[in-house]
Length: 197
Image (cartoon, rainbow, N blue to C red; front, top):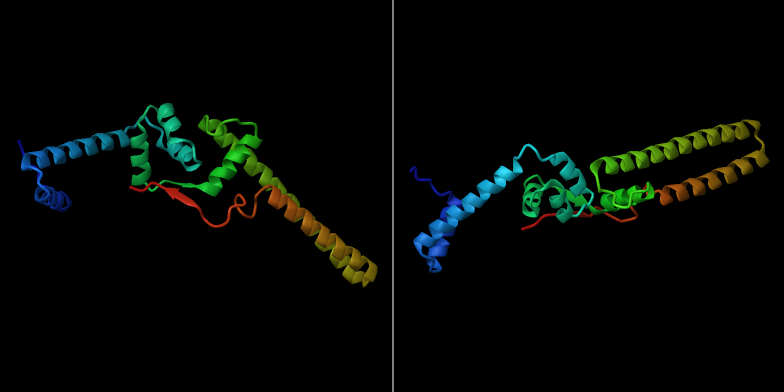
């Protein structure tokens, strides 16, 4: 049997445990058990049959780990390990926004299936794109109207253009607020949730 050298970290830990009164046999058994557990977790993390991109997408939108574990037949600790290893995080603002959009699209459980979730996100993206395109057209029309009023040097038309512009601005700001387009979800700042030991 080939003897395995301890890493510097394991050696330092073994010395601490020995100083604290643990026997050498117990320390060796603990380190072997931990290595075996690490090997098992590594095996689980590298399983080819798990669609990790789907798991990560669901994880990033705040889908409960317990439900993910059940859905993909893996342990919660495996998901947590994978998340920690790959620095997955849940962006709370994005998660809330995506879940709300999914519910608005008619999904009771927005991450029930990845396909439904993707469809809901795609639908919300399409709606936002339509709004932005309409806003741009409205501003282009307003700009044309303003320049014509300016060319005519008509004070009444310039006043109308000013009122039109202010009304348009208020209308579009209200729409952007209703769709959470400027603040991500009405939450201020970046809120990141990540796994900590």
